[in-house]
Length: 489
Ligand code: URP
Ligand code: ZN
Ligand code: ZN
Image (cartoon, rainbow, N blue to C red):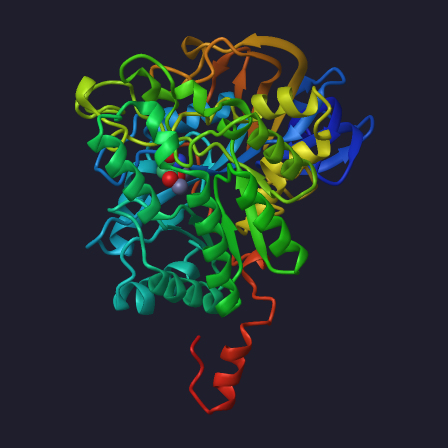
């Protein structure tokens, strides 16, 4: 009888805090011991041969089996989405349970569980997307759902079918502040985009490349500043998702310098693509279209600077998978203008290798920063740490063994999503996770999946520290309480 279920020997273990060398012992899905030359035997033993063993990635921004605002179902369900994630070294995903207007949030959450439970092969939690903050949603559903482990919400400042007003944002931030949830915001100025898009399309400029013109930089910068101001008014923490733009990033950096609890996320498309990628014949450029759009090399440099100096806490995929066909990315086929294209690019599998190759291998970030940006910080921000996001005694045994020297030419045929293309076709990547372990199960090995449909588990999230206010709302709000008004939140 073996002492452990699994031992990974000769590992160069890297967490966000430190690098060590040793053996990792796993029992019942947990790490139970880490030591050099560990005594005892494992029912299964893997010799990592001095390779890096990193915590499994946590992808806290991915869209799986979700309908877009325009009602287009994305291409990956909870099986293909999580299989693809696993092959890219990710062992936890936090996709969205997306409310569309008129829906009960509780009902939405139940439906996403029905979809995920029989299919997911790795562990998952859910953020809520809140588009309809009715008195029922604000007063009953959100407080109850937070208690049940749904401790983060995404809100949109743009998209006709999704956007909430500034007034509604204040309502949502107030509930999140009071009950311990973190709000994530898609910050783009809706009216700027609509106005630009209207005039572009009216004058016949509907091709995908004009998406980047309509989604002007200033639209992201303005909305970022406004979102931060709304959060400041009520002293609520906030996380800005998929940041792409120089001025917005600087606004985030300055807010953090003031001591505000404002967090930032970026994604592979903002280090690896530019608006020029959308400049293709016909509607082909739609394959590179996401919001905010990829910008230019100067913006890429600003994104790298913010990854390096800690302005960004997370590097997520924003995997938003749509097949390039009539009904998918381009609902009306060749007649589709950028206004009707489904927004988003796939990236759940390429997220970690892309940052490893472009960031660690090229000396832009350290390996420990890589772990923080792809795993540890996600778990911390969303109430899953230290169960996820690290390799430590007591944590779930989620890790990826990396071959840092493996050269890969990216091609969609070798990926495992259901999208039919990758925006990174032909890119050269150095370094890939070759063996992936999820709760002690070796789910990817020798290019093969070894995980049953439905073997992933739901993870209720704790109320995270990131959601705690700093104790400093706007002076006017403090003054209001001196007038004897009952507390606003
Ligand atoms: O273009 C994007 N990012 N599509 C996915 C939905 C979202 O806004 O995150
Ligand atoms: Zn978004
Ligand atoms: Zn997204």
